[in-house]
Length: 176
Ligand SMILES: [Zn+2]
Image 1 (cartoon, rainbow, N blue to C red):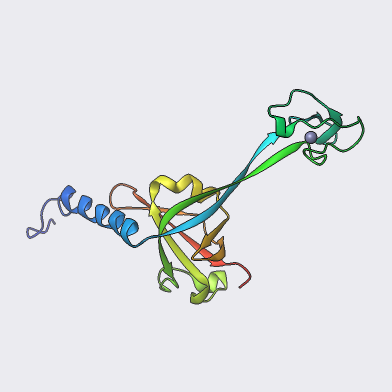
Image 2 (cartoon, protein in one colour; image 1 turned 120 degrees about the vertical axis):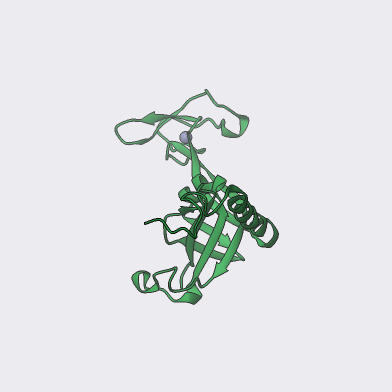
């Protein structure tokens, strides 16, 4: 039986209130957030200075001249190790990204299952971000938070009122 004292279903929380709430959190992240540097998956390219050995999955130790840049063009005798990729056949470029995050140390036990992860509140850090950086967060395994090298514990969780607008992730300090 419908409760006469309440507005019809779907009208409890109107758009203005939802928007107000979402905007306040966005504002909090912008105003109180601190920059966190995330280590992203390295960008890999085939070495432009040598060929690929498909059976060994590494450089074939033969110089190729289709170099894409002067830095990558170093001749070497066939059979010796390619000096550009050190024989790996691929080049890796480290990538990182800096995002402003709402940083919370030691989230409440109702929020984070310390027992399950075998961690203490002093070791756990919660990051809250706008949903826009979800992909990068999902792919990052490490981050520097307030000068501490940290490791991601959980997969990022999307959250929001009605519309998903935020992403929450949990991290722990490395070597703790
Ligand atoms: Zn090479």
